[in-house]
Image (cartoon, rainbow, N blue to C red; front, side, top):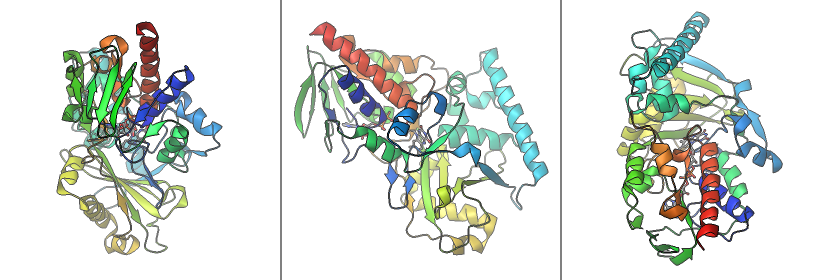
Length: 411
Ligand SMILES: Cc1cc2nc3c(=O)[nH]c(=O)nc-3n(C[C@H](O)[C@H](O)[C@H](O)COP(=O)(O)OP(=O)(O)OC[C@H]3O[C@@H](n4cnc5c(N)ncnc54)[C@H](O)[C@@H]3O)c2cc1C
């Protein structure tokens, strides 16, 4: 169930093992939290193929002739200091502080006993609040105090970050081609107590030897899918130990030729004092005419509650602080795009992070239910690539192997 990365991987794996499958997808499109707005073009959800060396989507994209661009080779960043851009000397200080920050956090993890990333993160240094904000809200989509330290360290992404030129959403759509997917088919009830699993909804009833459910932990926690019998206690506990964080994106179009002195793929950050929060930006990817803004964690949830357009207003406010009225002239308010993962009932957030002290929840979430007839899968299940397409893909394929084994064993 679900035609995001995990569901597509599960369907392909089960079919490869000789089973007949059917994917029921609530939305009228495939891709889940990978969605490319073709008009801009820009990814509103997943953007990079992280950890390229071990990312199963990299060879699949290459086999289909899709161009993957090495973002790290062109990455650059400007940092706004509040009244001026950071100098070279400032940036050297930032680099040194970053190394020290990571060393301190790693040391705290090795020492044991520390629960959250916030407890481990250095405080008081000139760059510390900026670094903690980056690693928490911007990267993990959650506040540092909401992130388990051991899990943060276990899910750190190393290696190259590749960008599919046509977008991650496009890549998933290509990988879903030819699969037996029923769109606009929200599953409302899953009965798994008998010899076969039944999925029910307005589409009717579908019976199978086993089912792989890939809805996000946000959707599972919302109760939108009724399980009968109820999910085991340990699974329900794991769902609640892995709440959804939020990362929101906005794309602003250039009005004319002014590119705000930023190169293609140029990043913008702001140095933060403790308690401050901010958006970050990536400009003109692939030489295109839009600037992408990101807001994560509590800031993103606040913007989602304020409603459509709030992230556009904040992006302009941030950019006006740096560029003055030039930002208003260089960028258009209309014609842009913004994501809505926080209010979308089929995602209820961006990706999950583990509550401090709740180690074991990812394994509990992916443990077989009903002797393997029912498997949960998705990004939140992966022990090292959690929060990514690669993790979702790996988890879906693994769940499918378990489900296929259960079908063969039990029927
Ligand atoms: C803004 C943002 C930026 C991100 N950036 C990156 C990045 O750069 N790199 C990266 O690797 N990852 C990134 N991610 C994370 C990545 O998108 C997810 O980890 C991944 O897409 C999750 O895949 P999934 O299959 O687990 O879940 P989903 O993609 O959510 O798939 C689940 C599917 O189930 C469907 N569904 C839900 N409920 C039902 C129901 N009741 N009945 C039927 N179908 C249902 C949903 O519609 C959905 O299609 C980002 C995510 C966001 C939101």
